[in-house]
Image 1 (tube, rainbow, N blue to C red):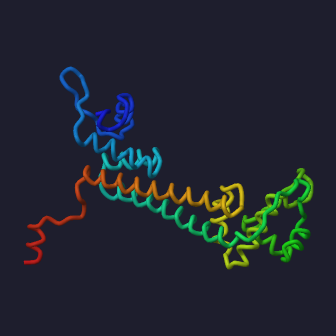
Image 2 (image 1 turned 180 degrees about the vertical axis):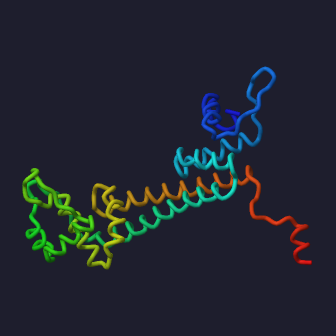
Image 3 (image 1 turned 90 degrees about the vertical axis):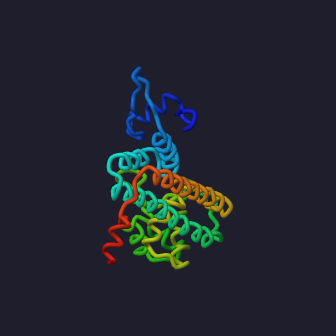
Length: 239
């Protein structure tokens, strides 16, 4: 079983213990006996873990063994939906990267922090605009000390410039709320770095989507079809 599934012997035991594999039968001497269903379960789990993570893959396998049907399908749908949301956010990030490619972001010094009025003047917007971005969680000023004035530190200034550029490019607040965390993951804002990072993320999403597809295909061999009507009943209803 370990050899065919690509796991170690101990890993196979752990998979059975964790409910990823159905309970194995035992020989008269007490040895575990595995069959094709165990192998397919192990292969399905491997693919699902690559696609949705080990914890979610275990939940899916538990549903497959316990009560195949709506719960299992709902979990698979949710896993695909999460990837779809990631893909949509990535698309926004790619469009944003193109929109900000001409925005120079130079190295700044810690002493370059700005007040609300200073940053508003630098961007050519009203202070109320910055307060709106603050309320929406887009660019939030901080305090250097517990009782000090709120100021925009260099990374906040950078984010404000990006938000301003994207707002001028037509981005609304709601998409920006989902987009900014994606862009911040790159840690740098130059075009080549962003493009490389987003391309790697796209490859990761594609790989996980393919793994989910393979895992679902393996699962389909373990569970009976649902929602089908026996041929005799269908013929009878037509008659």
